[in-house]
Image 1 (cartoon, rainbow, N blue to C red):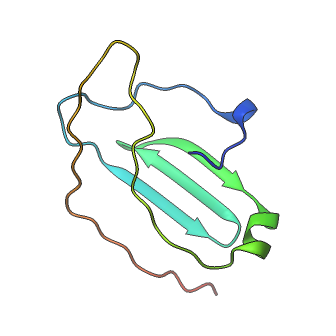
Image 2 (image 1 turned 90 degrees about the vertical axis):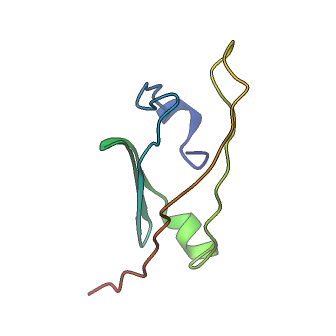
Length: 87
């Protein structure tokens, strides 16, 4: 996502237009991993961010869509969040 340095972002086509897409985000310590429809799209480790922001918020946002497509309606369903206690 937006925290991944620009030079490490990899384009992908894991979204299914017109369908529900499944996201999974796992944030443990300084590591944040993200999957879209079962395919990993991000694996970020940022020790400095953890030091300055040890806790925070979850935000849902759409940054954009592919050029020449849209307009789109965006909705979320079946949101689940749980705290992971480190060992």
